Image 1 (cartoon, rainbow, N blue to C red):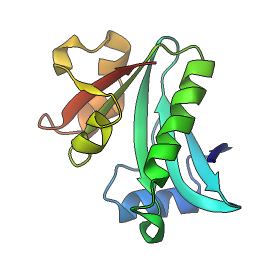
Image 2: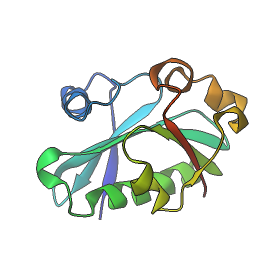
Image 3: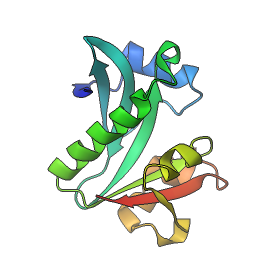
Length: 138
């Protein structure tokens, strides 16, 4: 079972994992270390408040990939988002569309995103227009 622990956005392990995966460095939002079996297995972030949250940079440590950990991290962060009062998760990806689609995220038009999501730095500036926009009702 994955347990999420809140981190500072300048955590060196988080930054190294994101850089290693070619993902944007932490910005606004809350970032978490995903612990499993007594050690850090990956990282994930959530940005925003209210009904709609942006899923940020889910990453599994390189030596732990292909073990289902990404799915367990996603399950944990979905539960956390729901506990925070979110009704939907939103994300942008250039590399993991199939991973998220297999986990009930659906493609949507970027223009249909709520204003709060469209105004995030990741949505407005960091991710290219070619990134897939996916949503999931919680």
